[in-house]
Image 1 (cartoon, rainbow, N blue to C red):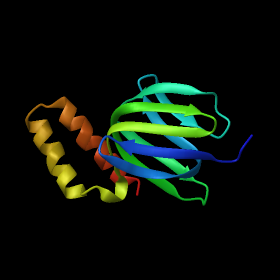
Image 2 (cartoon, rainbow, N blue to C red):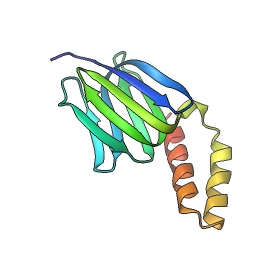
Image 3 (tube, rainbow, N blue to C red):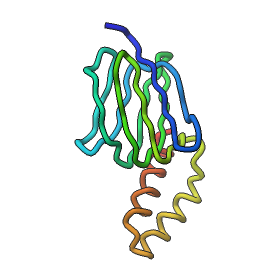
Image 4 (cartoon, rainbow, N blue to C red):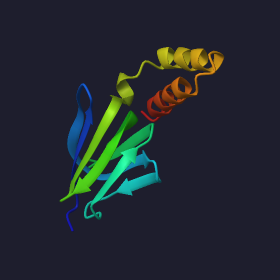
Length: 124
């Protein structure tokens, strides 16, 4: 079994992150899933949630992901997201304002997106 897997995190408009990892945790419609090297092939639907990538150098990459697909085969993990942003790209104050606006508008979808962004930013 290999000690690492290749990860590609891609949003509809750009490549967000690419590299080698030892573990990736993502939220799917079936629940949270952790993928390590040698995992069984899979294909799933991503839910909005933070994605955590443990890099081979011991670092951690966290991204806010909103919808899309996850697939794993031959030690290559692809996260194809509708929207994705790395935690260090998130403007926390803007996300907090968006959360308050979504709550006052009773917009559950916008509230969920803002909450995911804030949770990803907090994991920096």
